[in-house]
Image (cartoon, rainbow over all chains, first blue to last red; front, side, top):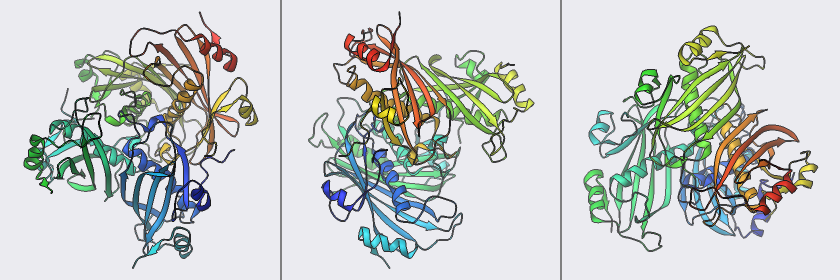
Length: 157
Length: 157
Length: 157
Length: 157
C-alpha cells in the first residue's frame, strides 16, 4: 500500500515548509462530509483532525496504544483558532507536538498547514490516569524524554 | 408538536438549578452517534452542541438568520473544558451567553449542565462581517443592548 | 425535565397523521451539523436517525440494553429511500417497526415524517448473536410477541 | 505532495486483488471518529466513504464538478450490506462503478476492500436534474460512454 496517512517526521515536514519545532504530522485531504452548509470546513472538523493525529502520535511516542494495560488518557481541554477557511478537496498537513508537561499531565499543540501556511492552530491538555482507575499515573521517563528530544517540550514544575 | 428543543429562558433555567447569568438554553439528550470508542461523549460533540445552541441564539437575539442579507459571522476561536464524562441517553441543557463585545466582535460563553451540575464549559470569539464581504460590520445597537440586558455582557473598548 | 425525545406510541403517532402500522416514534429537529454543503440534510444523517430510534426501540421491546449479558445485535444491511429534501430547523418524527422476523434475525422498517408526510423510508436486517460470541441466539418469545402485537410483524419460515 | 487519496484505476486495483469490473477506487484508513461505542466502524461511516468516492468519480467521469452550471444530482436511494466488521487504523480501498443507466438516472455500486476481501457493498440511485431546476436532464453521451467503456455499465430502457 502507498504511503498516505503515514506520519511525517521533521525532515519531511521541513520539505513542505513547516517550521521547527514541529516534528510529527499527517497529510490528508478535505472531505465533503467535513464541509457545513456554509460550504467550508466546519469548525468541529479541525478538532477531529487533532484527534486523528493525537492517536498515532501517542502510540509512536510510546505513551498509549489505547489497550487495557495502558494509562487512561483524559482530555481536559481543547482550543482551536481559525485563521483561514478551508474548502473541498484541499490537501493539508496536521501537525502535533507536546509543548509542556508535568508529572502526569501534558499540553499538546496542533496546527493545520495548507501549502506551508497555517490555517488553524490549537492545543489540548491531557492527564494520565492509571488503567481503569482514577489515580493519576506519572508519565514514563522514556516518553517525556521523547517529548523533549523530538518536540522541544518544556518540563514544568 | 410538543415543546422540545424550544429555547429555555432565565426562569426555566433557574428552575433547573442553572445559575445567573445564563439566560438562554436548549435541552437535549446524548445520542449513540455522539459516543466514541471509549463509550462516552466524544470531545468534538460538545462543540457541536455549542453550535446547535449558537444558531437559534443569534436568530433570537436579532443578529443573524443566516440569510444572504445578514452579516457574515465568522468563528475565530473555540475552547472547551471537559469537567465530567457524559454517557448514552443522559439529558442535559446547553446554555450560551455573550460575555463581552466590541464594535464588530463578541465573545460567547457556553456551558453544559447535567442535573444542575456543569460537565463542560467553553467559549467562542465571533466577528461580524458585511454580507458576502470582508469588511467588518458593527454589531447593531439593539443586539448589543440585548447582550447587556439579558446576558450581562460587558462592552470592551 | 419536559417530555422531548420520549418515544411516541401508536395513539400519539395517529394524532400526528402517521398511519398504521407505525407504533413507535421519536420527535426531533434538524440540526445545523446534519446539513451538508448543498444546504439540506445529508443522506447519512437519516441513517443516524434510524440508529437513534433503534436503540431505545430495542430496549423498550425487551431485546437489548446493549449491556454485556445482552445478545449481540449485528446490523447486516441498511437501506434508505430519499423522498424529499429536509432543511435546518424542521421538526420531524422518525418511526420504526419490525416488519418480519425469523428464528434469530429480524427486519426493521423506518420512516421519517414531516407534517404527516413521508420524507425518507428505509429498512435494516439485524441478526442476534450470543453475548460476546459468534453463534446465533434465537429471539426470545416475549420479544417476537411484541413484534407481532405492536408492529404487526410477520413470522417467516 | 505524495499520492494518497488519488483515485486508483483498473490496473492498480487489480494489483491489490480487486477484481473486474471495478475501475475506480480510493484508498484510505479507518479513523478514530469513524468508530462507535461498539469499537468498530459505525454503519453510517461506510455511506460517507461511498459519498467521498462518488464526488471525485462524478468529476473524473465528466458529469459534475458540483458547480452552478452542472446538473443537479439527486440521491434517490442508498443501500449497504455489512459483511465484516472493521477496526481502527485498518487500510481499505473503496471502489465505485456505474452498473446501469437510463436517460437521466443511473445506479452506482460501491464496495469496500480490506486486503483484497470485501467488507461492505452497496449501491445508490442518482437522478440528474437541470441546474437549479426540477426538470430531469439527460446524461451526456460522453459520460454514458465512459460508464460503458470503463465500468461495463448496462443501458436500460
